[in-house]
Length: 322
Image 1 (cartoon, rainbow, N blue to C red):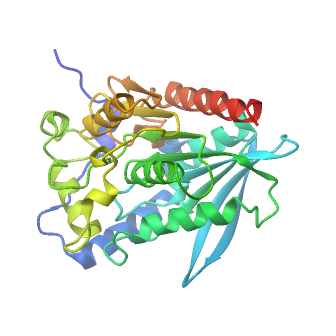
Image 2 (cartoon, rainbow, N blue to C red):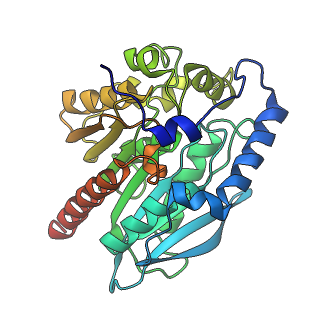
């Protein structure tokens, strides 16, 4: 008998959107509705409360031609220079906000003694690629200079990304091989690693596309809006890069019932084929988005523990090899 998603997921994570016919106005309206729901105290039983060992701080980061909102978590007890973890939320490049990662971001901050910064990057259809990635690149370069006096150690920087945010995190990690602040570790949670025409051809898309969290139709719509005609999809598809050699160590966390499972699996395979350190952890009954819904999916807690342990190991190694 095949595994089924947890009952809470089946009851509450429903997608009634007609992705084949929704227009731009519908996307924007849906995003606003989701943000309002996320702000509701009633949703805390799904997303859980932030870790009390870290405090939230809202900031605005001025960049050329735009201002980005940052939602940072600062550890209550850490002293001295602090690691920086850049965090990028999911949402297919058309939705989502840093708040959906409060539970995991605050937990990382408290456990690692790190500054964990969720970036409210620009979204399609108003701002397709490359805008979201440019926001990630520019935010990382700015925060490495510690403009807010958080006590950031520029030699201990890591990236975390969920779903489409995993695309941004992976691209920042790979970019750091040649330019920008050095990224010491990357954790990608059910990432999108292929935005080309082959993105929905992976076996897990057909096998798990009917499960809650991510459907094939939804992924196609996200790709249509985020990677419109004229944008080079290969430039935003890490599994298609010619070489992944010398990439920062990677941990990929995926759900066994997730349509994007093979996106993460193939990224790890490519990293290992090119001699880079990578590992994957698959949680059998987990669906897309499970790390953001710890109240529904028990696997979220061991997944967060694994993420913290991986970052702790890698950021400690960065200190030892200075």
